[in-house]
Structure formats: structure tokens, C-alpha cells
Amino acid sequence: MGKSRLFAPLFSLGISLLGLAAAQHVTIKYWLWDPNEEVGYKGCVASFEQLHPNITVKITQTGWANYWNNLLTSFVSGTAPDVFWDHVSRFPQLVQSGQLLNLKPYIQQAHLKTNIYTFNNLTKLWDYKGGVYGLPKDFDAIAIFYNKNMFKAAGINPNMANSWTWNPTNGGTFGQVIRKLTVDKNGVRGTSAKFNPSNVKTWGFTPFSGTGPGGNVGQTQWSWLAYSNGWQYSPGSKPGQWVTHFDYNSPKLAQTFQWIVNWQKAGYLSPYSTTTSLGGDSLFLSGKVAMTSDGAWMAGYYYSNAKFPVGVALLPIGPDGRKSMSNDLSDAIWSGSPHKQQAWEWVKYLASPACQNIVARYAVVLPAIKQASQLAVKTFESKGINIRPFYQEAANPKTAFLWPFSKNGNEVYNTAHSDLQKVFLGDVSNIQSYLDQMNKQINSMVQ
Image 1 (cartoon, helix red, strand yellow):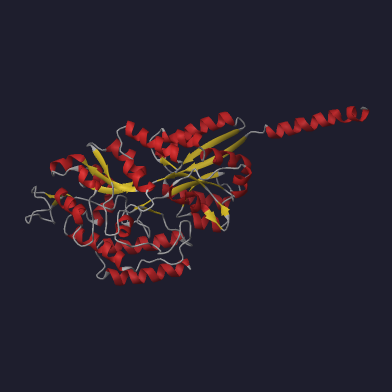
Image 2 (cartoon, rainbow, N blue to C red):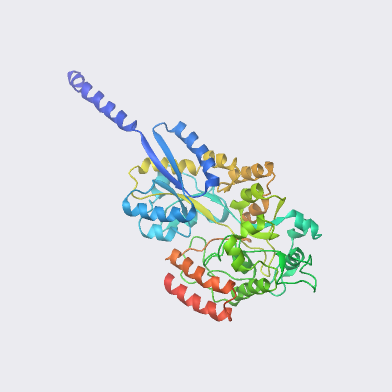
């Protein structure tokens, strides 16, 4: 008993010190790039900090280009954020350079269920050599945004878009719609023999919703057209498997690109030079283009900024069916974080129904968890935004395909970006031969 009394003060002191250590306040730095989504994650921060009063989460939002430059610089300087958004195009570089923390031990210790992330084996995207280097935060798909007023003026029933078709020969019924929506400055539509392709007032369609060809991926630009024509980035590759051989020399891809080039020359698609200088989204919002293909993450932007009623339609059905890329972002932890356990608590919360349901109520993206994504669909609809075509495409395994990732992914992307600009500018006389050379160069980079 005496011995117990002797050590009692020391024991109590030990407990107190442990208590002080447990109560130590920690600030977690969290980086993201989309300003539209920031408000939703601020909601998650408020909820998380109530549950973890000793952890503060500081959000830093930076635009896409500066985001990656700043992130790479911060790795070198040792000032990187504890938690940050990761993209599949950058994942190979980050995981191979040792910048990402393996979450598998944390997942196992927490008995975390990862089967709640439903679409397209999302968790497999972040696997590498038996480890897990991110948890899914959302998913997306591609669809057609259209100007409802222009559809009405052209006498087009929006319901026909549920089954419209496309092919690289004559454009299918999707091509017919494009021609009807194209109007020259004399008011003549693209379906008339009197149409003047050199004097266009409104183009029927642009696949270049952004400001470029989309590198080697063409996510919103041409991937869905090429896949619906029977092409694949790397035939035989499985979900989550790194690509070691691309198929950019396929005649199916050359046919797809040739259609885009031909229809630009015919005046039905906005010229690449005009589109990329101004931005396809800007052309659409200004009424210069009647339709554009874009991602689910842009729905709120178009509906909020358009001065006309916006519609969303499924992608057309090609020779090989309807196809849409479905992509995912993850929340990753920097391997050099001094607060790994607290960072894990934040990532675990971000990947939970609690946070993803909060994000769903802001109607910006479709969260990765099925329950939350369904809530997001309803929230979008309550704001008058039709998001169901994206959800329908992503949920269908026969329709959805994944972003390809490989070694030297950023270099591969930039190489194709430069090469394909020449294709879409119409500066390439033989697209097939040109793609043969591009394919050899890219494949030498991914072996």
C-alpha cells in the first residue's frame, strides 16, 4: 500500500502529461482547387471541428494550374499541406516519388468499409503495389449541355436526345441536330444547300468546352466520341491498372479526329482556334455555340451563368454504344506530414457519409458514396438543374470507362496536348500517319 502511495503522485503526473499531449491543438492544412466546391468543404470543416475540438482544418483554394505548381514546390520545401486533393493524372508521379502516405494500415485499423464507393471500382484507382493512397471524394461523367431556346427555334424535340446516334461517316442523328442548330449570318441553317460555312453566326456544337484538346485523355473533348466508335486507350487494361501501352495509332481514333476536323471545315463545329482562344464554355454561354460536351462539375456553372434555359442530355450512341468517361478525385495525405494521425482523422471524415452528405446539399459535385450522390441529384433538381444524365452514365458499367493513368503521366499529357493541337487546327494532312508517330513517342515514355 505504501509503495502504491509513493508512486501515486508520479502516476498522476504521468496521466496529466498524457492528457496534455492528447489535448495538444493541431492545425491541418487542406488544399483544393475548385472554388465552387470550397463552400461545401467549409461545411464539413465546421462539423468535423465540433467532433475534434483539438484539430483545426485550414482550407487553401488555388486554381488548377497554380495548385499543382504550388504543391510540387511545397514538397521540395517541406511545407506541403497535410491533406490535399489528388487527381488520377498526377497520381503516378506523386506515388512513385514517395509523396503520398499509404492509408491501408489506417483503413484496416479503423475497420473502414470501402465498398460504399460504388461506381467503377473507385477505390482501385488509388491502389499501388498493395497500398492505398487516397479515398474517393466524388465521381463525374460527361454529357451534352444545350441551349433550350435554340432547340425550340430549330424545331428539335429534346426527347430525341435520349436515343440520338453518332458515327464518323455522316454524324448520325446527333449530326443532324448539329446541322439544324448551325446558322449562318444570313439566317440559313446548316441543313440547307445555301448555308455559308465561312459566315457562321451560331455553330451547332463544340467538343472543346475548355481551352485545348485535352492532352492524351480528351476527357470532355473527344474521349466519349472515340470510345463510342470502338476505340480504347489501352485494350485489355483493367480498372486501376497502369497503362504500359497506348493505342493512339488505332484507325478508330483517326476516324474520330477526322470527323471533328471535317465538321469544323464544313462550318458545323466551332473552329478550334476560335474555341480555344475564347473557351468553349464562353462560346456556349454567349450564344455562339448551341451545344457543348462537358463534365458534371460544370452543371452549376452553366445553369447559374447562362442567360437562357440550359438543358442536359445523354451523350449520343455510337457504333459501339454510348460511352462516357467517369473520373474520381481523392483526398490524399502527404507522407511528410507532421500530423499524420490527425490528417487521417480528417481524411476518414471526408470519405464518410457525414461529410459527403454535407457536400451533396451544396449541389456542386456528385459525391463518391451512392447515398450521398443520390442526395446530390435531388438537391440539383431542387435548384432546377438536371444532373441525372451524368448519374445514369456513370452508374452503367457498359457506358462508363475510366481515366487512363501511367508512368510519366504529366509528360504524356503535355506531349499529346501539343501534337493534337496541330490535328484540330487542321495542320495535319494525314492524321493516321501522324498518330502513328505520336503513339510511338508516347509508348516510349510509359514502358
